Image (cartoon, rainbow, N blue to C red; front, side, top):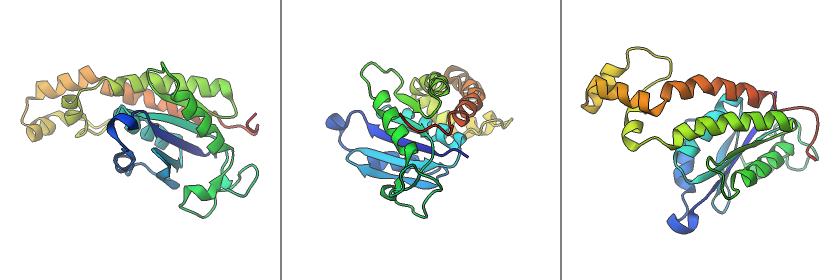
Length: 213
């Protein structure tokens, strides 16, 4: 089973101040092996158990429009180990080492490059598959980045794949069912969740026995 490490750092801390606390609160619903926590400065790192959680965390961070997101796929282990291995018995990210963290570092540096419109990147042993996963994540991320607050007010009350939600959501928000339907359509919410499994599958294929160059 591959390990998924996310390194997330802030794009605009000089303008708005340190927002890591807000990021960590937004990531609490995500399943983790080692919880997201501040690594240093305006950066957080966490390790998640599967590709689905990695995609979920990436989209939650991108939604805030102020974070570079790097996903590293590769082994991790005790910080003292040379090439990683089984996860150490720790909840402290500074006690963890291995190629997965190296890949995540390289990925977040790629995401932070000037001109990157959707600041998410992927790195791992299979560079070609990592690029494919990154491309799909950027397409999904573009949908997430362009949503309005009004659309999010609707989407935050929906559960993917569940029918019959629009009427109770409309009642809770005090708007019409048609307004809910339009928000879902404009936001490409169904399309996002239809594409997530493709990103998850590609991420799961990035891992291999080869070590970082």
